[in-house]
Image 1 (tube, rainbow, N blue to C red):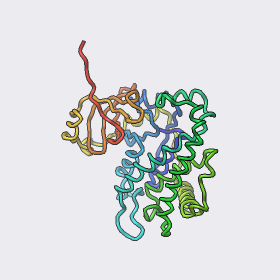
Image 2: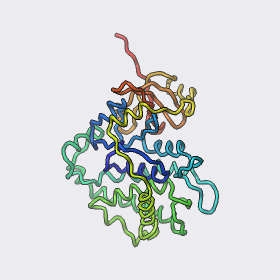
Image 3: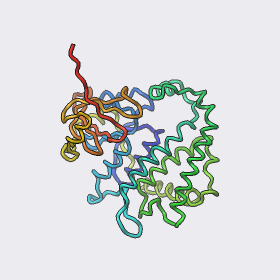
Image 4: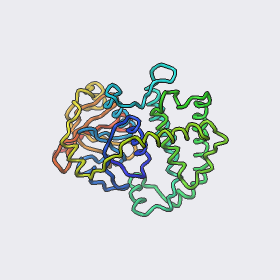
Length: 332
């Protein structure tokens, strides 16, 4: 489930392409409501994209990428987002995940939104975004862009410098892998997104950062993605009801694959099979998803939800960025 202008959807599109995993797409609105998700799947998480593999629905692109890699292994003929190093040796999988999640997806990406042309957005879009940013004020945002551009420039220059430093020894990809890795995809989608803004062209200084920008890494990766996508099957388009029906009828991964860490759950006063609200740290309790806690480990929270079709869905959330809280039942 995604919409065309979503930069994080582009990231997952590219992950699926690198993995060579065909997929179907449900196009949803760029604002709420999204009945294809909230009503049919019983999932009130508002971020996009979400990804279903069978009856398992994954939220947050850090977990989505990890799930795609795990559930479509190279041993079954799929590609990988953690390719071997070019001169031998296994990839630094943990480092690639940490770099992407804690730098590319957060520090780097979060610098971009303030530079968007907020004065051009329609009222319905602004009202929707005010549900997660109540203090959003177009005039203030536009007046702050000069200051933000300075901060963004400093951070972006630092990012270019890091990428440039990684690439100056002649390697093709950021972590010297045989093919692009999750780290390359993570930096690439943010660069391409920001580069399309009307006021950011001056930030992409090819002369200053030749290895990162000029006919090198960024250009090479764009060409790689374009060539690979030409050989990749076009995604099939589904309606929300069609997708929900297909997901409902599909099998799910056994709960013991994720398991239930009772010790870790006890620290949060949780027990298996209790009703919980999974609360996103960024958008808060108003976009919490309720369900029965069925699996829980160091990386994932899994709950059962039920939509208007009366089918049960298994929804997965990462531990980082989400907090499961037990539902309190009050007696009158």
